[in-house]
Length: 218
Ligand SMILES: C[S@@+](CC[C@H](N)C(=O)[O-])C[C@H]1O[C@@H](n2cnc3c(N)ncnc32)[C@H](O)[C@@H]1O
Image 1 (cartoon, protein in one colour):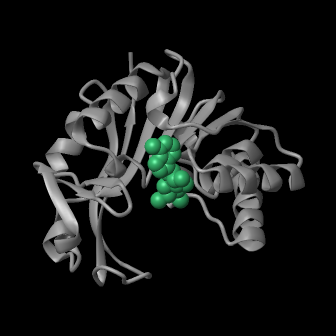
Image 2 (cartoon, rainbow, N blue to C red; image 1 turned 180 degrees about the vertical axis):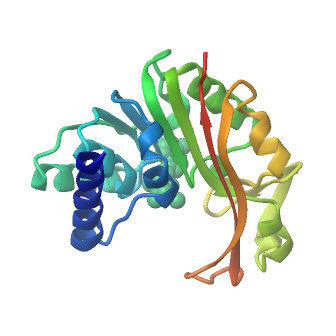
């Protein structure tokens, strides 16, 4: 236990100090539940979660459509002598191997798709879990629409889904029971709805956040 604590503390402090990156805190809190094995980070961005799990010794696959993010991440991994497998593609095109991963991370990504895509992605996430594997989701709730100052820029395309024409981007914000409905067979380990300060403040003073961790038991 002491050894595990030292490992994550070192990995955490190094990432936080060096690149001002820190993984989602809930993943650290529940680290003891994550078995050894491969990890998948969907929409990995700057790699704060993917790099953290690679530092802990997991084989990490990450998917991101952005060439810039993927290149930055490769440079960081090289600096740290870490080997992660990059998939520079759209998540919808990525075939998640079945029963493979001990952890699948979808942090700040599922809200960027219309509902049919979310159904498809989460179905593949569920199928991709090894026994005792976990799914972690950090996303945003419908409350965000109520407080948004930019709704006029968006076109409503289906319930709780808007489309931003200029940015060619969907936004689907979740009702709390709706997010849980995508993971019906998992044991819920953690679920929370929160209101956090929006540091960028382009839209509203607050962000309404949903955070979920579930585990495959059978
Ligand atoms: C808001 S960032 C979240 C980054 C990271 N997961 C985090 O929590 O800090 C969303 C990331 O998803 C990527 N992304 C957006 N749409 C995508 C898609 N269709 N397929 C793959 N990656 C996508 C973006 O390039 C960006 O890096």
